[in-house]
Length: 304
Image (tube, rainbow, N blue to C red; front, side, top):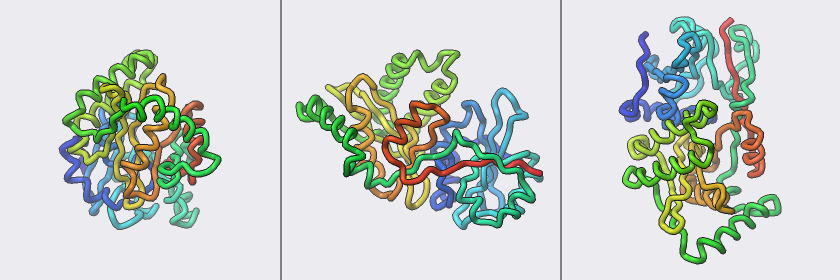
């Protein structure tokens, strides 16, 4: 079997397999898979046994390679099948195996075929859409207060417009991203590899948001784009907030953006997956402050 590099044009071919896939980890968002390819890792795929088989290979180190779980619309593949598939394709391991998967089979069925290693930096934060849209109760009092301050300074004075993000206004959003990066010590700098990768992935998402069926909003303050967000479908009950950027010096803007995302982008979903904290302490504190209802662990399965 020969896997081929994934491309934006493959979205329409792959989307039917992802529409009702069973996994809750954000990495199984098709938009995310496509836009992050060609960054640190090159993503490739093949359709086999009525499923999408996906691999990732480090751009600068071909020996650093792995599969993710096959994606289809009919459920989970057995550990026996996964072991046979990886051996057939010549890959030593699977990454981003959701904790949900491990509970579907007897522990010996997996442990007899794989070494199991937790990936704590890829543990996803999951929230009730209703919680983030309504912000009820004392636990969200600080968020409501910051949004109130933002409303008083900007919204109530007619300085704010919230608009749908499309390819038609992507140019404005790219200008915003350039300025945002300048404020964060230049995303292209040698010491900011992760930000540089994110900038390239977000640029791809902005330029192809319609083709990738992404959902996005932008916030203009006095006519200037000052915040953007992009979301995508994960499965029938959960969406992923793939990207969220705002000028941090505007007090309350991030909280206002987050609340608008919940109301405008996730109204069709019960849950919002806001991805992992990647082991970054400040990001972890921010995600915890919104009181997730679940934290979904990610695991690596290495062939025995």
